[in-house]
Amino acid sequence: MKRINLLIWLLLLTAVSFAQVSVDETGTYLVTKQDGKPFFWLADTGWELFHRLTREEAVVYLNTRQKQEFNVIMAVALAEIDGLRQPNMYGSVPFKDLKTLEWATTPGDNPNIPGEYDYWDHVDFVVREAAKRKIYIGLLPTWGDKVAYQWGAGPMVFNNNPDAAYAYAKKLAERYKDQWNILWILGGDRTATYERDGRRHDDRPVWRAMAKGIKEACRQDAFITYHTGWPETTVFFPDEDWLDMHSLQSGHGSRTVKPWETIHEGLKARPPRPMMDLEPCYEDHPVNVWDGKWTRAERGYFNDYDVRARIYRGVFAGGAGAVYG
Image 1 (cartoon, rainbow, N blue to C red):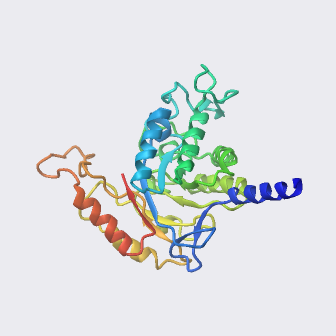
Image 2: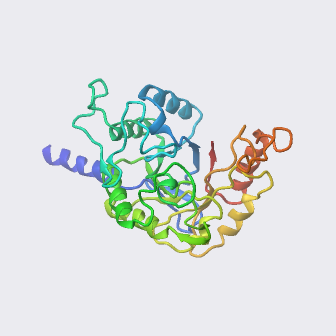
């Protein structure tokens, strides 16, 4: 009996130690590993889920998304809105020191004991609650402002620092390598190469280092994609062994972009990979608000039709899923 129980335990351990979503043999769509059935990535962008919500609020949010039949929540470990310096809802930050990037962890994980429930305990809680509801977490190790010399609160703790990026991503992946509901997303609203202040920047060594750390921790079996700005990932990551799915972000800058055409062309790339729009426009988001010329009358807001048009056309063009925000 003990040997049978041990065998069952080993089988269960094996089952949860590997990514549960993969790419089909043709390289054009996603499948579940256990049965090989097509997997439709239906996600919500809960970017600040770990940073801005209490345990109770996170449960309400996840319950709602479960009822709405979402199967992926895209959320960021090191959040965009000053996520390194502004504490979460329990007064905790991810790192003790922003130079050494030593994790701010404490013994225990009881939220009712002052000083015991740290930042990473809260991430653990939310990830487990999502798993209970059969929801994947599309986990971004960091938002792009911690890497790219572009914009945002930062600070750029990984900029030109592949060693720090590798160490952080590997430690994060070690923490979640046996959690079945993790899908890895690098990037965080940033292209990997770009022009800034009169010179060309290339952050690909940093993102590759993160991918390497994740793959090593997960014994090479981790699903990884990349959340870009514009252009699409086929431009700067055309043939990377670690990248399982290409993506684009049609975003919030224009009503006239045609991401479905980009998806159609991207699926022709070789080697073949699935592709999808990881961030289309959001309903009630102002159209191109960043140049200081926005007005309600002229540009207005994206509406429900704008959202549906991008999602449906993207899927009909061959996209591997749909994302709402």
